[in-house]
Image (cartoon, rainbow, N blue to C red):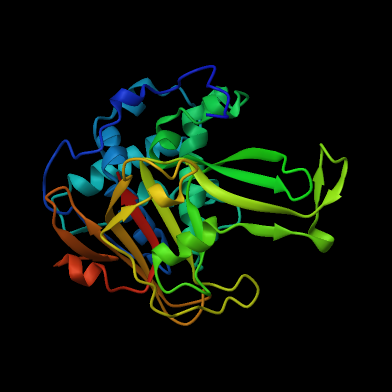
Length: 328
């Protein structure tokens, strides 16, 4: 509603399977080759994303891929198959390490990077790989790749003019949702803050096309199209100082996204937690990343570089989470 339909469907939505097609215990850990804990933690969270793993395990992408150079989907396919089919306890994530600088030009091997930044760059690289020569398509069509259908959604920004009550809607694609946690002690409180209307006035006035002048208005974001996999970043790091907000932010195993949707009435839109990426340390310039993931056997594991240890869901729910991964 309110958005143009796609001109082309790049991947059939009915082929995306949200439940694991193969059930097994957790795969291999990932060896740290020097400040690569952020890299390892993100890769493990992606590896245990059921619809992505199902597709990559099928090797369907590489069989049809015609890209001559860097293809992040082919690389992730190699990586996920290696990790989940490994007979050893830990492997070097060589296929991804080799293309580290292609994932993000600003990344430097051996330097601690931000896990959220690496996740965004990796998912964007996968999206570019799926688009291939179709990158000039309309936004709606670009959102029909398997990557965008898994991780992507659309936000609606609705501005209401206080003078004439005119409503102006715009839509923005997203692959994850960064949430401010300064005033929030829980994920649901942070989501409430996210959808709370903001007043536009003073220097921040809105140029109303109907009034033809700058006016006071309200602006509100809502999730317009919900993703199959919701990735949330709890913004723990100060952009300027790199200092960290270390407070407890509670998050549930099951999340109903319905109250934060443009269409807030209706059936609950339930998500289940399957991965938690944690940062321990006092700033983004150091510390350590690890994660908790739910394997295809339904059990939770703490994955800390080469270490993969069975844990209970209660432990996974009591972490100083930085990234949260929920699946419908």
